[in-house]
Image 1: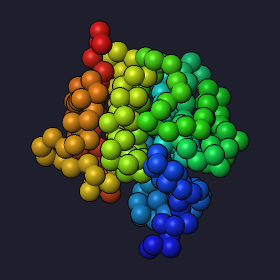
Image 2: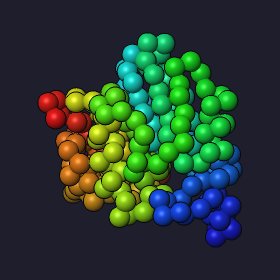
Image 3: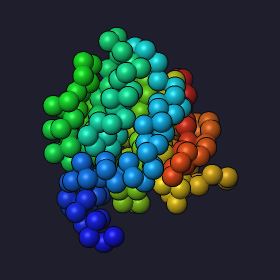
Length: 200
């Protein structure tokens, strides 16, 4: 297991883990979901509340698996941006991007994106790669780029996102200014949704 983790990691330069072998990681994810990865991510897309014409941001996008599914909903009148620190993964995502998709190298804690730009912000299986002390900064950045009335969706391993009672990640989202609305379970994952209140 240690060898597998080492192959997946490019470095921990103080900002978190960067996944180098993104294709291997995708294969591992497929195995973890026992063939249900596509159906789980289609459920995630529905839970985000993304709509045609929306502008969506996928934080920790890797090779763009979720971003591509979001773009299928936002359609030609919308736009999807994916952000990830792994340059190889972003290069792959750019090479396979459809219309209305942009991929940039960056980290959740320092998003080089305009304020109040996105109707939907997603962060799936990425938060556990960010050092715990830097997670509040990531939520603050995601809040900054979310439009008033916009939505946040966060999903991660069940050990990180607990259901039942307020969890630290939900508290971080609330501290950043989001209003946490719901939480639930998916295969291998727990999630919560939140909204940036209008007028903030």
